[in-house]
Length: 116
Length: 113
Image (cartoon, rainbow over all chains, first blue to last red; front, side):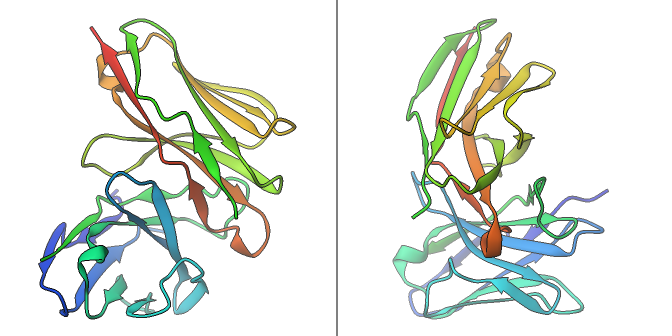
């Protein structure tokens, strides 16, 4: 049973380019969460999505960042016009159902974004 | 602002000892609590979750929750060098943000042989 899959694992972009990060949840999971981990800092929530719906995007920067989870295919986190401060590890997590007391979230291996 | 605080560490214990990791949270509406382990350069791995006051045991791990004191801890018995990692405390609150987890910055644990 494959776990959460993310690609690419490493991504290098120059300032001003676009970064696209992909996440395929665990089989049977329909809820996806994106977190960012800056060097020497904790994980910070960015966005929570279900298929075709953004449930909570309160952690997303107001500009340049967007996320989607289409009916078919992986969830995508898109960062436009990247800046050096976007360099971080981006983790995707998935859970099987609507959040409740358990809300176990299982993390993918992450995408390490480096902005030159 | 919902905050999750962990003792900063690093924490160093000898093999076979009990490692005690602590976490406090600011939001009294917090409902469930998670401990993740993260090896350097790897993704967080869920160890345990707890949502009722008291203790919950799973193998060498025991999670303890005290909602009145807004405190959750993780005890690792018979610590092994393979337990050396950063341990992340995460908290889930009710309401519209039920999906999101708030993480502490983690406590780095080293178990020396």
